[in-house]
Every structure is written in C-alpha cells, then in structure tokens.
Image (cartoon, rainbow, N blue to C red; front, side):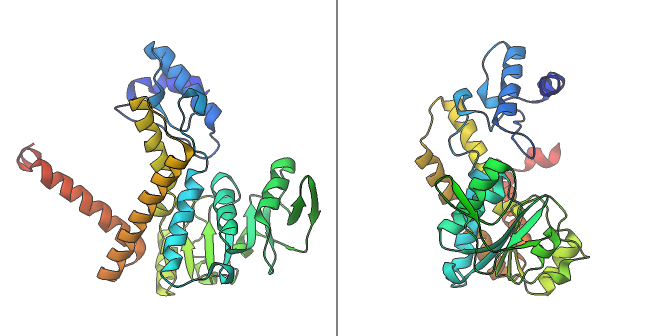
Length: 306
C-alpha cells in the first residue's frame, strides 16, 4: 500500500517540492519504503524526498524523540517564567505514544512530579508520583500501562488508581499535556479543566470553542504550532543533512533543536505579553510577521501586479 501510494504521488513530491514526514501510525520502516520506491521511480537514490527514515537510509539521529524533546524544551522554558519548581510541579500526560512517553520521561528526569499518564485504553494516577521509566519499560515489554517500579528486569506494581482519559484531563494538576489525538478538549469538557498550564503536544487537541473557554478561565494554553514543532524541526535538519551529505551527531541535533525551540518560545511569549493576547494568537502574529517581512524583502511590485 505504501509503495502504491508513492507511485500515485511521485510527481507531486521531491526534495525541492513537497517532503512527506512521519505522523500517527507511521515509523522509520514505512518512511524507508517511501524513499526506496521513490528512488526506484527516479532511478537514483533520493533520501531527501521524505524524513523520519531509518538512520541507515539517511535518517537523522534524534528524529524519533524530537517531538517529545521539543515539547520538553518549551515546557521547561515556559514554566521557568512563573518560578515553578520542578519537584513541586504536578503534571498529567494524556497519550503515552512516541511523543507523550518521551516528554513524560524527560520531565520526570528533570524532577517534575508526573502523577498521571494514559494511553488509548485508559490511564493511571498516583498522587505520590509515577516512576515513568519503569512504566515505559513495562509497556514496551507487555503493551500494557500500569504503575510500576522496575529494578533491572524485575517490575513490581505500585499503588495507583485506574482512571479514564476524561478523568485525566480534569485532574487538579499544574500542567496538563494532551499528547494523544485531536479534539480531546471541547466545549463539553473545557469547564472541567483545572490545570494552570496546557501544552498541546498532539495536533489540535483543543477545539476553538474550548480554547475560548480556557482563555476566559485564565489558563495558559501553549499551542501545538510551537509545542510539537520539534518533530518538523528535526525533519528539516534531516533534509539539510541529506542535501549536504554530511550527518550530525545526536548531541549536535539535540543542541540545535534546543536552541531553536527555546528561542521561538521566548519570542512568542514576548509577543503575547507585549500585546496582551493569548499565546496561540501570538504564535500566529509571529508567523504572519515573518511572512510579511519575507514578502517585503523580495519587493512587492511583481507580487501585486501578477
């Protein structure tokens, strides 16, 4: 199916045209199939046609963890502005997939108190905090989500409460991280949100109607266009490496990602404060300012004449 799809769109993608990247239910193997099929059609190896490939086919180190890591850099930068102490900051993460599990583990290792996580089957909650690396180890081995503490290969269940995804969203925590699918917070349940900060790691987890409700409640919503930009940023890094034929170390990839995400978080925060507007609106202002500057820089006569 993947190869047939590439056959159908081969004339519309390419290193200088449109570059597909991985998303839900795709992985490096599938992206590798796409590269191979496109290269077969073009009769030359063309790694820059897609991103998220296996490293052995020109993929970038750090691409698989990039979305979660970028989210972590945003959260860390934002919470520091409020003087939040990690050990005293409670966090709930909805979604324990590629992005959610990564950001949860990074926050845990940075000292934040992860009290709840969930997957498509439901969630777990422990007021005392969860040992995220142990939960991830157990889930990788069993595909089940349980509150565990693992030492080596031995894992023991610890006290926890089983909750639904809806209950997780309504927990009284400092930070809520929706990292599952779109439309999780709607006008129906927005009033139940108690978190002071919401970071959109998923694409579009908050509807526009819910967004207005959260803003009226004084909840800071950091938008997906910023929070989950780590994935597409490292996809760009991968494309650059493919075009140059020079590949970076994991340390360099993560360092460049941290610099980019931290800088953009600072800029969007400043715009929101200066204009007294929501962070989502500030992100759009930032983007439109850049577009306007680019149009002005190239000269506008031909643009308007044509």
